[in-house]
Length: 599
Image (cartoon, rainbow, N blue to C red):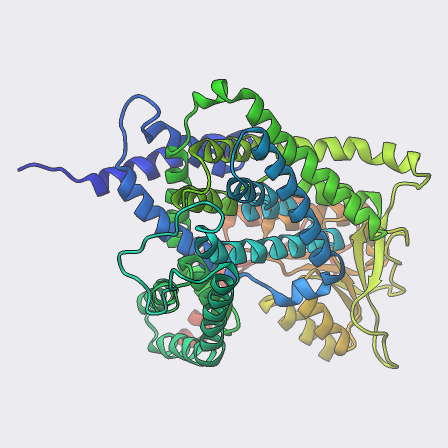
Protein backbone atom coordinates (compact mmCIF):
# COMPACT_ATOMS: atom_id res chain seq x y z
CA UNK A 1 0.00 0.00 0.00
CA UNK A 2 1.60 3.29 -1.06
CA UNK A 3 2.09 5.94 1.60
CA UNK A 4 2.28 9.12 -0.46
CA UNK A 5 1.34 11.65 2.23
CA UNK A 6 2.82 15.04 1.28
CA UNK A 7 0.73 16.88 3.89
CA UNK A 8 2.02 14.71 6.74
CA UNK A 9 5.58 14.84 5.37
CA UNK A 10 5.44 18.65 5.15
CA UNK A 11 4.08 19.06 8.69
CA UNK A 12 6.49 16.52 10.20
CA UNK A 13 9.55 17.92 8.41
CA UNK A 14 8.55 21.52 9.13
CA UNK A 15 7.76 21.10 12.81
CA UNK A 16 10.59 18.62 13.43
CA UNK A 17 13.34 20.76 11.96
CA UNK A 18 11.77 23.91 13.43
CA UNK A 19 12.02 22.33 16.89
CA UNK A 20 15.67 21.31 16.38
CA UNK A 21 16.85 24.66 15.06
CA UNK A 22 14.55 26.65 17.34
CA UNK A 23 16.08 24.87 20.34
CA UNK A 24 19.60 25.54 19.01
CA UNK A 25 18.75 29.22 18.50
CA UNK A 26 17.35 29.47 22.02
CA UNK A 27 20.49 27.78 23.37
CA UNK A 28 22.59 30.58 21.89
CA UNK A 29 20.12 33.23 23.15
CA UNK A 30 18.84 33.95 19.64
CA UNK A 31 15.07 34.28 19.04
CA UNK A 32 13.70 30.83 18.00
CA UNK A 33 12.08 32.56 15.03
CA UNK A 34 15.52 32.50 13.36
CA UNK A 35 15.67 28.72 13.83
CA UNK A 36 12.24 28.32 12.23
CA UNK A 37 13.37 30.30 9.19
CA UNK A 38 16.53 28.20 8.89
CA UNK A 39 14.39 25.03 9.06
CA UNK A 40 12.33 26.38 6.17
CA UNK A 41 15.47 27.07 4.14
CA UNK A 42 16.61 23.45 4.65
CA UNK A 43 13.31 21.91 3.44
CA UNK A 44 12.92 24.44 0.63
CA UNK A 45 13.71 23.98 -3.06
CA UNK A 46 16.89 26.09 -2.88
CA UNK A 47 18.86 23.58 -0.78
CA UNK A 48 19.71 19.91 -1.44
CA UNK A 49 17.90 17.05 0.28
CA UNK A 50 14.22 16.69 1.19
CA UNK A 51 11.95 19.30 -0.40
CA UNK A 52 8.55 19.89 1.23
CA UNK A 53 5.42 20.51 -0.84
CA UNK A 54 5.46 24.29 -1.36
CA UNK A 55 1.74 24.59 -2.19
CA UNK A 56 0.72 22.71 0.96
CA UNK A 57 3.18 24.75 3.01
CA UNK A 58 1.62 27.96 1.68
CA UNK A 59 -1.88 26.82 2.68
CA UNK A 60 -0.66 25.88 6.15
CA UNK A 61 1.08 29.26 6.30
CA UNK A 62 -2.24 30.96 5.47
CA UNK A 63 -3.75 29.37 8.57
CA UNK A 64 -0.65 30.53 10.45
CA UNK A 65 -1.25 34.11 9.30
CA UNK A 66 -4.89 33.94 10.41
CA UNK A 67 -3.98 32.66 13.87
CA UNK A 68 -1.03 35.06 14.14
CA UNK A 69 -3.28 38.05 13.41
CA UNK A 70 -5.94 36.62 15.73
CA UNK A 71 -3.33 36.60 18.51
CA UNK A 72 -2.37 40.22 17.73
CA UNK A 73 -6.03 41.24 18.01
CA UNK A 74 -6.51 39.20 21.18
CA UNK A 75 -3.69 41.11 22.88
CA UNK A 76 -4.53 44.49 21.35
CA UNK A 77 -4.95 47.06 24.10
CA UNK A 78 -6.58 50.35 23.18
CA UNK A 79 -5.87 51.58 26.72
CA UNK A 80 -2.12 50.99 26.34
CA UNK A 81 -2.15 52.83 23.03
CA UNK A 82 -4.13 55.80 24.39
CA UNK A 83 -1.79 56.16 27.39
CA UNK A 84 1.16 56.94 25.08
CA UNK A 85 -0.72 58.21 22.02
CA UNK A 86 0.95 61.63 22.12
CA UNK A 87 4.29 60.13 21.03
CA UNK A 88 3.44 56.63 19.76
CA UNK A 89 0.99 57.70 17.04
CA UNK A 90 2.96 60.54 15.39
CA UNK A 91 6.27 58.79 16.08
CA UNK A 92 5.25 55.53 14.42
CA UNK A 93 3.68 57.30 11.44
CA UNK A 94 6.75 59.46 10.80
CA UNK A 95 9.10 56.50 11.24
CA UNK A 96 7.03 54.34 8.86
CA UNK A 97 7.08 57.16 6.30
CA UNK A 98 10.85 57.67 6.61
CA UNK A 99 11.66 53.94 6.36
CA UNK A 100 9.29 53.57 3.39
CA UNK A 101 11.04 56.44 1.58
CA UNK A 102 14.41 54.77 2.19
CA UNK A 103 12.98 51.52 0.81
CA UNK A 104 11.61 53.31 -2.25
CA UNK A 105 15.03 54.89 -2.78
CA UNK A 106 16.81 51.53 -2.68
CA UNK A 107 14.17 50.02 -4.98
CA UNK A 108 14.76 52.86 -7.47
CA UNK A 109 18.51 52.16 -7.42
CA UNK A 110 17.75 48.49 -8.11
CA UNK A 111 15.50 49.42 -11.05
CA UNK A 112 12.20 48.39 -9.50
CA UNK A 113 8.82 50.04 -9.98
CA UNK A 114 7.24 52.52 -7.56
CA UNK A 115 4.74 49.88 -6.41
CA UNK A 116 7.59 47.49 -5.62
CA UNK A 117 9.37 50.24 -3.70
CA UNK A 118 6.27 51.00 -1.62
CA UNK A 119 5.78 47.34 -0.65
CA UNK A 120 9.50 46.95 0.03
CA UNK A 121 9.67 50.10 2.16
CA UNK A 122 6.56 49.23 4.15
CA UNK A 123 7.95 45.75 4.86
CA UNK A 124 11.17 47.30 6.22
CA UNK A 125 9.31 49.83 8.39
CA UNK A 126 7.52 47.48 10.81
CA UNK A 127 9.21 45.70 13.72
CA UNK A 128 8.56 42.15 14.90
CA UNK A 129 6.08 41.87 17.77
CA UNK A 130 7.67 38.63 18.97
CA UNK A 131 11.22 40.00 19.05
CA UNK A 132 10.32 43.37 20.60
CA UNK A 133 8.20 41.93 23.41
CA UNK A 134 10.81 39.31 24.22
CA UNK A 135 13.54 41.97 24.39
CA UNK A 136 11.44 44.12 26.74
CA UNK A 137 10.53 41.17 28.95
CA UNK A 138 14.15 40.06 29.30
CA UNK A 139 15.10 43.58 30.44
CA UNK A 140 12.01 43.99 32.67
CA UNK A 141 10.89 47.06 30.73
CA UNK A 142 7.30 46.11 29.84
CA UNK A 143 5.76 48.05 32.75
CA UNK A 144 8.03 51.08 32.42
CA UNK A 145 7.21 54.24 30.51
CA UNK A 146 9.80 53.32 27.88
CA UNK A 147 8.23 49.89 27.52
CA UNK A 148 4.72 51.30 27.12
CA UNK A 149 5.92 53.74 24.47
CA UNK A 150 7.62 50.93 22.54
CA UNK A 151 4.53 48.70 22.75
CA UNK A 152 2.21 51.57 21.78
CA UNK A 153 4.53 52.41 18.87
CA UNK A 154 4.35 48.78 17.79
CA UNK A 155 0.54 48.76 17.97
CA UNK A 156 0.39 51.77 15.63
CA UNK A 157 2.78 50.03 13.23
CA UNK A 158 0.63 46.89 13.31
CA UNK A 159 -2.55 48.89 12.61
CA UNK A 160 -0.82 50.63 9.70
CA UNK A 161 0.23 47.26 8.26
CA UNK A 162 -3.32 45.91 8.65
CA UNK A 163 -4.52 48.90 6.60
CA UNK A 164 -1.80 48.20 4.02
CA UNK A 165 -2.93 44.56 3.74
CA UNK A 166 -6.45 45.79 3.03
CA UNK A 167 -5.54 48.42 0.43
CA UNK A 168 -2.71 46.72 -1.50
CA UNK A 169 -4.89 44.12 -3.28
CA UNK A 170 -7.31 46.87 -4.31
CA UNK A 171 -4.52 49.17 -5.55
CA UNK A 172 -2.34 46.49 -7.17
CA UNK A 173 -3.50 47.27 -10.69
CA UNK A 174 -2.89 51.01 -10.26
CA UNK A 175 0.58 50.43 -8.78
CA UNK A 176 1.70 48.25 -11.68
CA UNK A 177 0.84 44.80 -10.35
CA UNK A 178 -1.97 42.33 -10.95
CA UNK A 179 -5.10 42.30 -8.79
CA UNK A 180 -5.36 39.14 -6.74
CA UNK A 181 -7.44 36.52 -8.51
CA UNK A 182 -9.85 34.67 -6.23
CA UNK A 183 -11.58 31.57 -7.52
CA UNK A 184 -14.31 32.18 -4.97
CA UNK A 185 -15.03 35.86 -5.45
CA UNK A 186 -16.51 37.78 -2.57
CA UNK A 187 -20.12 38.87 -2.64
CA UNK A 188 -18.91 42.45 -2.71
CA UNK A 189 -16.18 42.17 -5.38
CA UNK A 190 -15.03 45.40 -7.03
CA UNK A 191 -15.94 46.32 -10.59
CA UNK A 192 -12.79 46.61 -12.68
CA UNK A 193 -13.79 49.93 -14.25
CA UNK A 194 -13.33 52.12 -11.15
CA UNK A 195 -10.36 54.45 -10.94
CA UNK A 196 -7.93 54.67 -8.03
CA UNK A 197 -10.15 56.79 -5.79
CA UNK A 198 -13.16 54.64 -6.59
CA UNK A 199 -11.18 51.52 -5.69
CA UNK A 200 -9.95 53.07 -2.43
CA UNK A 201 -13.40 54.40 -1.56
CA UNK A 202 -15.21 51.13 -2.17
CA UNK A 203 -12.50 49.14 -0.37
CA UNK A 204 -12.74 51.39 2.68
CA UNK A 205 -16.54 51.22 2.52
CA UNK A 206 -16.40 47.40 2.59
CA UNK A 207 -13.97 47.51 5.50
CA UNK A 208 -16.26 49.96 7.29
CA UNK A 209 -19.24 47.65 6.69
CA UNK A 210 -17.30 44.74 8.12
CA UNK A 211 -16.24 46.79 11.15
CA UNK A 212 -19.84 47.88 11.78
CA UNK A 213 -21.07 44.29 11.59
CA UNK A 214 -18.35 43.18 14.02
CA UNK A 215 -19.03 46.02 16.47
CA UNK A 216 -22.83 45.68 16.36
CA UNK A 217 -23.26 41.93 15.94
CA UNK A 218 -19.87 40.46 16.80
CA UNK A 219 -19.60 42.22 20.18
CA UNK A 220 -22.85 40.56 21.24
CA UNK A 221 -22.62 37.18 19.54
CA UNK A 222 -18.96 36.26 20.17
CA UNK A 223 -18.96 36.87 23.97
CA UNK A 224 -22.34 35.09 24.20
CA UNK A 225 -20.95 32.03 22.41
CA UNK A 226 -17.87 31.96 24.67
CA UNK A 227 -19.94 32.22 27.85
CA UNK A 228 -22.41 29.58 26.66
CA UNK A 229 -19.65 27.12 25.83
CA UNK A 230 -17.76 27.92 29.06
CA UNK A 231 -20.85 26.99 31.08
CA UNK A 232 -20.95 23.56 29.45
CA UNK A 233 -17.79 22.79 31.41
CA UNK A 234 -16.12 21.22 28.38
CA UNK A 235 -12.58 22.49 27.88
CA UNK A 236 -12.46 20.74 24.51
CA UNK A 237 -15.56 22.55 23.24
CA UNK A 238 -14.29 25.89 24.54
CA UNK A 239 -10.99 25.47 22.72
CA UNK A 240 -12.86 24.46 19.58
CA UNK A 241 -15.19 27.47 19.83
CA UNK A 242 -12.25 29.87 20.02
CA UNK A 243 -10.62 28.38 16.91
CA UNK A 244 -13.94 28.19 15.04
CA UNK A 245 -14.62 31.87 15.73
CA UNK A 246 -11.11 32.93 14.66
CA UNK A 247 -11.12 30.95 11.41
CA UNK A 248 -14.82 31.50 10.70
CA UNK A 249 -14.72 35.27 11.07
CA UNK A 250 -11.56 35.48 8.95
CA UNK A 251 -13.07 33.34 6.19
CA UNK A 252 -16.42 35.14 6.32
CA UNK A 253 -14.73 38.55 6.17
CA UNK A 254 -12.85 37.52 3.03
CA UNK A 255 -15.83 35.96 1.26
CA UNK A 256 -18.65 38.30 2.30
CA UNK A 257 -16.83 41.64 2.48
CA UNK A 258 -13.78 41.07 0.28
CA UNK A 259 -11.35 42.12 3.04
CA UNK A 260 -8.24 40.15 3.88
CA UNK A 261 -8.21 37.03 6.02
CA UNK A 262 -5.68 38.84 8.23
CA UNK A 263 -8.04 41.75 8.96
CA UNK A 264 -10.92 39.40 9.73
CA UNK A 265 -8.79 37.42 12.16
CA UNK A 266 -7.48 40.61 13.79
CA UNK A 267 -11.02 41.87 14.45
CA UNK A 268 -12.13 38.47 15.75
CA UNK A 269 -9.32 38.62 18.30
CA UNK A 270 -9.98 42.25 19.17
CA UNK A 271 -13.70 41.63 19.79
CA UNK A 272 -12.91 38.51 21.81
CA UNK A 273 -10.42 40.47 23.94
CA UNK A 274 -13.33 42.46 25.41
CA UNK A 275 -14.83 39.30 26.91
CA UNK A 276 -14.11 38.33 30.50
CA UNK A 277 -13.02 34.97 29.08
CA UNK A 278 -10.39 36.50 26.80
CA UNK A 279 -7.47 35.31 28.95
CA UNK A 280 -8.80 31.77 28.90
CA UNK A 281 -9.39 32.03 25.13
CA UNK A 282 -5.80 33.15 24.62
CA UNK A 283 -4.50 30.32 26.79
CA UNK A 284 -6.59 27.64 25.06
CA UNK A 285 -5.73 28.77 21.52
CA UNK A 286 -2.03 29.35 22.19
CA UNK A 287 -0.73 25.83 21.34
CA UNK A 288 -2.39 25.74 17.92
CA UNK A 289 -1.49 29.37 17.24
CA UNK A 290 2.13 28.61 18.05
CA UNK A 291 2.19 25.48 15.89
CA UNK A 292 0.74 27.12 12.78
CA UNK A 293 2.78 30.29 13.33
CA UNK A 294 5.89 28.09 13.28
CA UNK A 295 4.70 26.56 10.00
CA UNK A 296 4.23 30.08 8.64
CA UNK A 297 7.83 30.97 9.40
CA UNK A 298 8.98 27.65 7.95
CA UNK A 299 7.07 28.33 4.72
CA UNK A 300 8.66 31.78 4.53
CA UNK A 301 12.11 30.22 4.96
CA UNK A 302 11.34 27.80 2.10
CA UNK A 303 11.16 30.77 -0.25
CA UNK A 304 14.58 32.12 0.72
CA UNK A 305 17.58 31.38 -1.49
CA UNK A 306 20.67 31.32 0.77
CA UNK A 307 22.96 31.48 -2.25
CA UNK A 308 21.46 34.88 -2.98
CA UNK A 309 23.52 36.23 -0.06
CA UNK A 310 26.51 36.02 -2.41
CA UNK A 311 24.92 37.46 -5.53
CA UNK A 312 22.97 40.14 -3.60
CA UNK A 313 25.66 41.11 -1.10
CA UNK A 314 25.46 44.90 -1.53
CA UNK A 315 21.63 45.11 -1.72
CA UNK A 316 21.40 42.98 1.44
CA UNK A 317 23.82 45.28 3.27
CA UNK A 318 21.80 48.30 2.10
CA UNK A 319 18.57 46.64 3.28
CA UNK A 320 20.14 45.87 6.65
CA UNK A 321 21.37 49.46 6.94
CA UNK A 322 17.82 50.77 6.42
CA UNK A 323 16.48 48.43 9.14
CA UNK A 324 19.20 48.92 11.74
CA UNK A 325 20.57 52.41 11.05
CA UNK A 326 17.85 54.28 9.17
CA UNK A 327 14.93 53.23 11.36
CA UNK A 328 16.96 53.65 14.56
CA UNK A 329 18.08 57.18 13.72
CA UNK A 330 14.53 58.16 12.77
CA UNK A 331 13.10 56.75 16.02
CA UNK A 332 15.87 58.40 18.09
CA UNK A 333 15.31 61.84 16.54
CA UNK A 334 11.53 61.58 16.90
CA UNK A 335 11.67 60.62 20.61
CA UNK A 336 14.22 63.36 21.36
CA UNK A 337 12.02 65.87 19.49
CA UNK A 338 9.23 65.03 21.94
CA UNK A 339 11.63 65.96 24.78
CA UNK A 340 12.06 62.47 26.18
CA UNK A 341 15.39 61.46 27.77
CA UNK A 342 18.25 60.03 25.74
CA UNK A 343 17.88 56.68 27.53
CA UNK A 344 14.26 56.39 26.33
CA UNK A 345 15.19 57.34 22.77
CA UNK A 346 18.04 54.80 22.65
CA UNK A 347 15.92 51.95 24.04
CA UNK A 348 13.10 52.54 21.54
CA UNK A 349 15.61 52.81 18.69
CA UNK A 350 17.15 49.44 19.61
CA UNK A 351 13.72 47.82 20.05
CA UNK A 352 12.58 48.81 16.55
CA UNK A 353 15.84 47.93 14.75
CA UNK A 354 14.51 44.63 13.33
CA UNK A 355 11.67 43.31 11.17
CA UNK A 356 9.56 40.18 11.36
CA UNK A 357 6.06 38.77 10.94
CA UNK A 358 4.26 41.59 9.09
CA UNK A 359 7.28 42.05 6.83
CA UNK A 360 6.95 38.44 5.68
CA UNK A 361 3.20 38.78 5.15
CA UNK A 362 3.66 41.96 3.10
CA UNK A 363 6.47 40.39 1.07
CA UNK A 364 4.32 37.37 0.22
CA UNK A 365 1.37 39.57 -0.69
CA UNK A 366 3.56 41.82 -2.82
CA UNK A 367 4.98 38.87 -4.78
CA UNK A 368 1.50 37.36 -5.17
CA UNK A 369 0.20 40.65 -6.60
CA UNK A 370 3.18 40.86 -9.01
CA UNK A 371 4.19 44.12 -7.32
CA UNK A 372 7.39 42.97 -5.64
CA UNK A 373 10.04 40.96 -7.50
CA UNK A 374 11.27 37.76 -5.88
CA UNK A 375 14.60 39.49 -5.27
CA UNK A 376 12.74 41.93 -3.00
CA UNK A 377 11.29 39.06 -0.98
CA UNK A 378 14.78 37.56 -0.62
CA UNK A 379 16.17 40.90 0.56
CA UNK A 380 13.38 41.23 3.13
CA UNK A 381 13.97 37.70 4.41
CA UNK A 382 17.73 38.23 4.62
CA UNK A 383 17.21 41.59 6.36
CA UNK A 384 14.82 40.00 8.85
CA UNK A 385 17.12 37.12 9.74
CA UNK A 386 20.20 39.32 10.09
CA UNK A 387 18.43 42.10 12.02
CA UNK A 388 16.90 39.64 14.49
CA UNK A 389 20.32 38.06 15.02
CA UNK A 390 21.90 41.48 15.58
CA UNK A 391 19.13 42.89 17.79
CA UNK A 392 20.70 41.80 21.14
CA UNK A 393 23.91 43.47 19.96
CA UNK A 394 21.95 46.68 19.32
CA UNK A 395 20.95 46.81 22.99
CA UNK A 396 24.61 46.41 23.99
CA UNK A 397 25.54 49.23 21.61
CA UNK A 398 22.93 51.63 23.01
CA UNK A 399 23.98 50.77 26.58
CA UNK A 400 27.53 51.73 25.57
CA UNK A 401 26.38 54.91 23.79
CA UNK A 402 24.05 56.12 26.56
CA UNK A 403 26.61 57.63 29.00
CA UNK A 404 28.62 59.10 26.12
CA UNK A 405 25.57 60.82 24.59
CA UNK A 406 24.31 62.02 27.98
CA UNK A 407 27.73 63.46 28.71
CA UNK A 408 27.80 65.20 25.32
CA UNK A 409 24.31 66.58 25.98
CA UNK A 410 25.33 67.76 29.45
CA UNK A 411 22.80 65.52 31.21
CA UNK A 412 23.68 63.01 33.92
CA UNK A 413 22.54 59.42 33.70
CA UNK A 414 18.80 59.41 34.36
CA UNK A 415 17.59 57.42 37.37
CA UNK A 416 14.14 55.95 37.93
CA UNK A 417 11.16 58.20 37.47
CA UNK A 418 8.61 58.64 40.23
CA UNK A 419 5.23 59.07 38.63
CA UNK A 420 1.89 59.01 40.45
CA UNK A 421 -0.66 56.52 39.17
CA UNK A 422 -3.96 58.15 38.37
CA UNK A 423 -5.23 61.53 39.57
CA UNK A 424 -4.07 63.35 42.67
CA UNK A 425 -5.02 61.63 45.87
CA UNK A 426 -7.94 62.79 47.95
CA UNK A 427 -7.99 62.95 51.74
CA UNK A 428 -7.87 59.46 53.22
CA UNK A 429 -6.21 57.93 50.16
CA UNK A 430 -2.61 56.81 49.91
CA UNK A 431 -0.44 57.75 46.96
CA UNK A 432 0.97 55.12 44.67
CA UNK A 433 4.45 55.56 43.30
CA UNK A 434 5.66 54.09 40.03
CA UNK A 435 9.31 53.58 39.22
CA UNK A 436 9.98 54.21 35.56
CA UNK A 437 13.54 54.39 34.27
CA UNK A 438 14.35 57.32 32.13
CA UNK A 439 13.35 60.55 33.89
CA UNK A 440 15.22 62.85 36.22
CA UNK A 441 13.06 62.81 39.35
CA UNK A 442 15.22 60.36 41.34
CA UNK A 443 14.42 56.98 42.87
CA UNK A 444 11.04 56.23 44.49
CA UNK A 445 10.67 57.77 47.97
CA UNK A 446 10.93 55.35 50.86
CA UNK A 447 7.74 54.61 52.74
CA UNK A 448 7.30 56.00 56.23
CA UNK A 449 5.94 52.65 57.46
CA UNK A 450 7.94 50.65 60.01
CA UNK A 451 7.25 47.30 61.65
CA UNK A 452 5.06 46.56 58.64
CA UNK A 453 4.55 43.68 56.21
CA UNK A 454 5.72 43.89 52.59
CA UNK A 455 3.30 42.00 50.34
CA UNK A 456 4.75 41.14 46.92
CA UNK A 457 2.03 40.55 44.33
CA UNK A 458 -1.71 41.16 44.60
CA UNK A 459 -3.24 38.42 42.47
CA UNK A 460 -5.56 35.64 43.60
CA UNK A 461 -3.35 34.73 46.56
CA UNK A 462 -1.98 38.16 47.42
CA UNK A 463 -5.42 39.80 47.45
CA UNK A 464 -6.70 37.29 50.04
CA UNK A 465 -3.63 37.91 52.20
CA UNK A 466 -4.10 41.66 51.84
CA UNK A 467 -7.73 41.51 52.97
CA UNK A 468 -6.72 39.47 56.03
CA UNK A 469 -3.94 41.91 56.94
CA UNK A 470 -6.33 44.82 56.59
CA UNK A 471 -8.99 43.17 58.77
CA UNK A 472 -6.33 42.40 61.40
CA UNK A 473 -5.27 46.08 61.33
CA UNK A 474 -1.67 45.07 60.54
CA UNK A 475 0.25 47.74 58.64
CA UNK A 476 1.37 46.65 55.18
CA UNK A 477 2.15 47.87 51.70
CA UNK A 478 1.96 46.12 48.33
CA UNK A 479 4.57 45.93 45.58
CA UNK A 480 2.74 45.30 42.30
CA UNK A 481 3.33 46.05 38.60
CA UNK A 482 -0.18 45.77 37.11
CA UNK A 483 -1.79 49.16 36.46
CA UNK A 484 -5.39 48.02 37.05
CA UNK A 485 -4.49 46.41 40.37
CA UNK A 486 -2.53 49.49 41.46
CA UNK A 487 -5.47 51.76 40.69
CA UNK A 488 -7.83 49.54 42.71
CA UNK A 489 -5.43 49.41 45.66
CA UNK A 490 -5.06 53.16 45.58
CA UNK A 491 -8.85 53.59 45.58
CA UNK A 492 -9.03 51.26 48.60
CA UNK A 493 -6.46 53.34 50.48
CA UNK A 494 -3.70 50.73 50.40
CA UNK A 495 -0.15 52.04 50.10
CA UNK A 496 1.66 50.64 47.07
CA UNK A 497 4.98 50.74 45.30
CA UNK A 498 4.62 50.15 41.56
CA UNK A 499 7.19 48.05 39.79
CA UNK A 500 9.06 44.77 40.02
CA UNK A 501 10.27 43.85 43.51
CA UNK A 502 13.47 42.41 42.01
CA UNK A 503 14.42 46.00 41.11
CA UNK A 504 16.69 47.44 43.82
CA UNK A 505 15.09 50.91 43.89
CA UNK A 506 11.56 49.53 43.91
CA UNK A 507 12.26 47.12 46.77
CA UNK A 508 14.19 49.76 48.72
CA UNK A 509 11.13 52.07 48.57
CA UNK A 510 9.24 49.51 50.69
CA UNK A 511 11.72 50.05 53.59
CA UNK A 512 12.77 46.40 54.07
CA UNK A 513 15.23 47.51 56.77
CA UNK A 514 12.34 48.54 59.01
CA UNK A 515 9.85 45.86 57.93
CA UNK A 516 8.74 43.01 60.20
CA UNK A 517 7.89 40.45 57.53
CA UNK A 518 8.04 39.87 53.79
CA UNK A 519 5.19 37.94 52.13
CA UNK A 520 5.90 36.65 48.62
CA UNK A 521 2.54 35.90 46.98
CA UNK A 522 3.93 35.66 43.44
CA UNK A 523 3.96 32.20 41.79
CA UNK A 524 7.39 32.60 40.15
CA UNK A 525 9.86 30.87 42.49
CA UNK A 526 12.91 32.10 40.57
CA UNK A 527 11.89 35.75 40.86
CA UNK A 528 10.81 35.22 44.47
CA UNK A 529 14.26 33.84 45.22
CA UNK A 530 15.86 37.04 43.98
CA UNK A 531 13.63 39.07 46.29
CA UNK A 532 14.47 36.80 49.25
CA UNK A 533 18.19 37.41 48.71
CA UNK A 534 17.61 41.15 48.49
CA UNK A 535 15.49 41.13 51.66
CA UNK A 536 18.05 39.11 53.63
CA UNK A 537 20.80 41.51 52.60
CA UNK A 538 18.75 44.53 53.70
CA UNK A 539 17.36 43.05 56.93
CA UNK A 540 18.70 39.71 58.26
CA UNK A 541 15.97 39.62 60.93
CA UNK A 542 13.00 39.99 58.54
CA UNK A 543 10.55 37.07 58.57
CA UNK A 544 10.16 35.77 55.00
CA UNK A 545 7.03 33.85 53.94
CA UNK A 546 6.82 32.50 50.37
CA UNK A 547 4.67 30.20 48.22
CA UNK A 548 5.73 27.26 46.08
CA UNK A 549 4.27 24.67 43.73
CA UNK A 550 6.72 21.79 44.21
CA UNK A 551 9.18 20.27 46.65
CA UNK A 552 12.02 21.55 44.46
CA UNK A 553 10.72 25.13 44.75
CA UNK A 554 10.38 24.72 48.53
CA UNK A 555 14.01 23.61 48.79
CA UNK A 556 15.11 26.42 46.46
CA UNK A 557 13.43 29.15 48.49
CA UNK A 558 14.49 27.65 51.82
CA UNK A 559 18.07 27.50 50.61
CA UNK A 560 17.97 31.20 49.79
CA UNK A 561 16.75 32.15 53.27
CA UNK A 562 12.94 31.94 53.33
CA UNK A 563 11.64 31.14 56.84
CA UNK A 564 8.26 29.75 55.80
CA UNK A 565 7.40 28.20 52.44
CA UNK A 566 3.78 27.21 51.81
CA UNK A 567 3.13 24.69 49.06
CA UNK A 568 -0.29 25.13 47.48
CA UNK A 569 -0.96 21.54 46.49
CA UNK A 570 -0.30 20.22 50.00
CA UNK A 571 -2.56 22.85 51.50
CA UNK A 572 -5.35 21.71 49.17
CA UNK A 573 -4.77 18.10 50.20
CA UNK A 574 -4.73 19.14 53.86
CA UNK A 575 -8.08 20.90 53.44
CA UNK A 576 -9.69 17.94 51.68
CA UNK A 577 -8.48 15.46 54.31
CA UNK A 578 -9.71 17.73 57.10
CA UNK A 579 -13.18 17.93 55.56
CA UNK A 580 -13.34 14.16 55.00
CA UNK A 581 -11.89 12.95 58.31
CA UNK A 582 -12.25 15.91 60.60
CA UNK A 583 -8.53 15.99 61.21
CA UNK A 584 -5.31 16.42 59.28
CA UNK A 585 -3.45 13.17 58.69
CA UNK A 586 -0.96 13.67 55.84
CA UNK A 587 2.08 11.51 56.70
CA UNK A 588 4.38 13.22 54.20
CA UNK A 589 6.45 16.38 54.08
CA UNK A 590 4.47 19.20 55.69
CA UNK A 591 2.86 21.76 53.44
CA UNK A 592 4.44 24.49 55.51
CA UNK A 593 8.11 24.33 56.34
CA UNK A 594 9.04 26.74 59.10
CA UNK A 595 12.26 27.68 60.82
CA UNK A 596 11.84 28.41 64.54
CA UNK A 597 11.86 32.19 64.43
CA UNK A 598 9.33 34.61 65.94
CA UNK A 599 7.06 36.38 63.51
